[in-house]
Length: 243
Figure 1: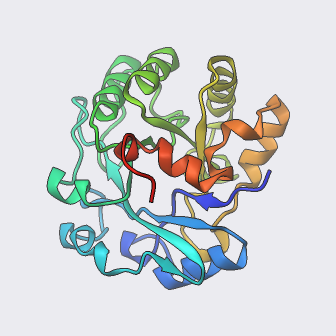
Figure 2: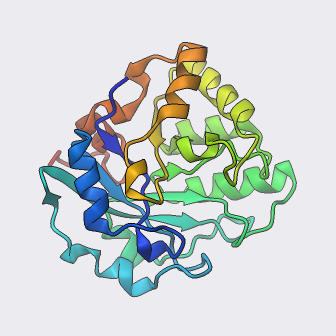
């Protein structure tokens, strides 16, 4: 499978990543990607950047080294009511957003509480993607998550970093396999994100690809293989004229 877009990347602004934006974009170009999303952690994450950082992302070119750039954010879901940590005015001016559950921002609850938090976040018209829903530290009712994804148009992410041995979300493989099988059964497309925190990881989906091969997941359900199809599937772009 050849992906042409990486929808989940971090630079030094996130506080625990180690490359610059330029290094990440150059790496994307060198790997033949056509699109990269800049999705640093929103302000509730410890040691990340500020609200002003996201408000000023418009100064970055839309294209560098032949790669289209989406200015975005990885939002933190901060309570079981699905609240997120960036205001609507700034969020509406970005190109893409991911909303995720992170240990520094919200302690894991029950399956019902975690599921409710995700669904409420997914109901936000400016949340395009639910980030790493396979994290076993946050048990979810995947039947309810899939129903919400269909109803709200929110995309579910298959996160490569969740599958890297020794990573923060150890034990994710079983859940991600279940998500993939449900996506095939429901004919629901997914997005794949490297969740790269260093430029060598940009566009790297090695572990996701291995798992997709195991379950026979079809390439046509991976939106990252077709950048325009991906852009059209983002909730904020639906009904808008394609750029």
